[in-house]
Structure formats: structure tokens, C-alpha cells
Amino acid sequence: MTDDMMRLRTLLEKSSDAGLLREMIGFTAQRLMELEVTGLAGAEHGERSAGRVNHRNGYRDRDWETRAGTVELRIPKLRRGSYFPAFLEPRRMAEKALTAVIQEAYIQGVSTRSVDELVKAMGMSGISKSQVSRLCEEIDGKIDAFLGRPLEGDWPYLWLDAIYVKVRENGRVVSVAATVAVAVNGDGRREVLGLAIGPSEAETFWTDFLRSLARRGLRGVKLVVSDAHEGLKAAVAKVLHASWQRCRVHFMRNVLAHAGKSGRRVVSAFIATAFAQEDAAAARVQWRQVADQLRPKVPKLAAMMDEAETDVLAFMSFPKDHRVKIHSTNPLERLNGEIKRRTDVVGIFPNEAAVVRLVGAIILEQNDDWAVQRARYMTLETIAPLNDNPIVSLPAVAA
Image (tube, rainbow, N blue to C red; front, side):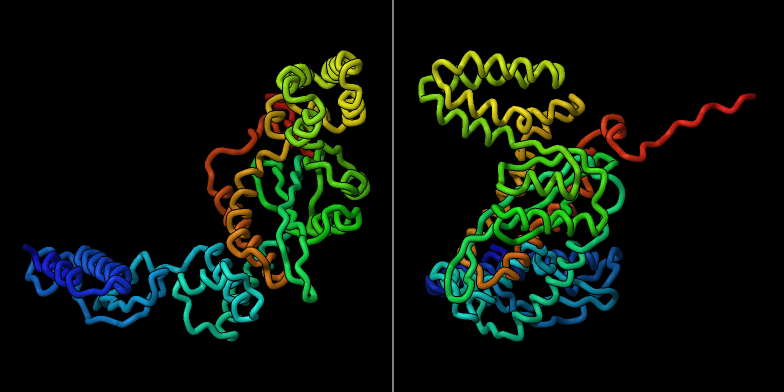
């Protein structure tokens, strides 16, 4: 039996149930570090080997906060260069932001029971206001720079969607919308443009948010895609002078509620025939025919179709290759799911700044992921005609 196996067996026999997980984590982490350093040195500790490229130089102690509690580590040192274990690398921005928000809620005494339990489970003992303040400042600086960066070039398509979160405000718990703006640029790539916290029903909110994006350089917007928020349509026309696409998925959900359980599948298939047309003119003709066919039996549903025709079919005036991506807010579904997952952990935020901190970190990471993707969201060939300043091909020079 190897020395490692003997030490592991001794650990299992002597440790109490309460500290077993923490001790196991410590044992595994220490063994991983030893193996990594052996690989970097080219030889085992104390081994004479022609393949050795470095030597050890003692250890340095470090406490590692884990969900099982504080684990005491001894990190090996090298004579040349440095070594730092991968599992102790700085956490991703969103993880840091979540930790900061949880700690802030905890020390301010405005946390929920679930947050209190999470603080203990994560082993975050000895939290001080100064520690939290430093962590918040580190994160906020990066997020502020990201959310305030200049926007260059044209942005033909803009998606707006909101996730609702609870915030403590003047002793009350209120619901606010964290609204995210995502766009496709003239190169066919997606970027997160901005974030705003406020009442999503108010026209003044949408006007202020869109104007803030315009001041940073947002231009060339041809179509804005969103759910049917009050005031948004007017703000889009006023600030961006762009068309508005009402999310087709949300519209269908609303309209099918009036079709009855037995008729939903048939009605959905009828309406879908309009979306299958080749161009906007044919789609409008088919839309009206479907509405007229449904009118005798479900007049309320037909009236909804009459009212929503322009907004739900706006995407049909754009390139066919883009329509699957611009008819709804579904392209943001994965991002919204991640935001909701993280915000649900917090439950009630201590203030709006904490919402910006966490949601801002999540969208910053998403933007970084999109930036390194090899494939464009939309091809250059299909996006170029939508740019206000397309590349003009010069005539060939005569020989």
C-alpha cells in the first residue's frame, strides 16, 4: 500500500463526521499541488534525475475558504519562477460579484434566511465591512467601464429584455426590472450594450435608457426586438427612429390563451402560415385572411391579430436569413436564464447598486464569451446591406 493510501486510510479512521469533508478536500488539494509541482520540476521531491528542470523551495501557508469551511493549505514554492494552483486562481467575475452581494446583504442585516445559511455553508467567516467594500470597489470599477464604453459603428438589430428582481428600498421590498440591451454590430457579431434598473412600464424609463445608449454612440438601428412593454414603442420611435418587433413567442402565448385548450394547436398552425410567407406583403395578406377565418368563432382573438399585425410582422421586412433570430427575444433566453439563476440565489438585494454589480458581472462575462466565438452570429454578406455606411466596391482601373 502506498504512503498516500496509508495517509488517506488514517484520515478516514480518525476524522469526525463533521470535519471529514473538509479534511478530504484538504488532502486532495495537497496531493494535486504536489503532482503539479513534480511535473513542473521534472522530478519527484528529493529525486536525483537528469530530467529535472527546477527545484523546490519550501512551502507557503494559505487558508482556502470552501463550502465545507476553511482548509489550511501548504503551497509548494519553486526556486525559479512561481507556482500557484489552478483551483485557487481568482474566481470568475460573476462568482466574485455574487459573493460580494451576498456578503453585503449579510453584514447590513437585510439578508434572507437562505442568504444567512449560504454564508455559513460557503465558509465565509469573519466578514468585515472593509473587506466587502474593497471587493465591491474592485468589481464595480470593471463593470462601470464596461457599461460606459463607447459604441462604434452600426448596430442594425437591438434586443431588449428584462428580468424582475426584489430590492429593499426605504424599508420596503419592491420589484424592479433589470433591463439588458444586446445588439448585433456591422460585423455580424453580438455584444451586450447596456444595463438599466427601473420600472419597465414607464416611457420615461425607456427613453432615458435608449438616450444613454445613443450618447455612447449607438446608431444605425433598424429593428428593436422586445416584449410588449408600455412606453417602449414610443421611445424607440422617438430616440432611435427604428422599427419595433413585438416578440412573436410572447404574442403567440397571449393570443392562444383565447383559443381554448382544444383549439390552440389548430390556431397556432393557422397563424404560422403567415410567418412562412416569402416576403412582408404576402405575410400581411395571409395574416388578414387567417384573422377573418377565425373572427366568427373567436372574435377577441381576431381583434388581437388586427391590432398586432404591424408589430408582430415587422421582422418579415428584413433578410430571410435573419428572420429566425429577430422575430423574438429567444436569442437572449440563455443569458436571461443565467441572470435569473444567480439573482434567485440572493433573493432580496440590499440595494440597486448590488443588482448592477451582479447582473453587470454576468453580462460582462457573456460579452467576453461572444467576443471569442469564431463564428459570427450573422454573416458579413447578409448584414452588410443593413449598414448605413456599407463598403462601396470601386470600379476596376482600366489597363
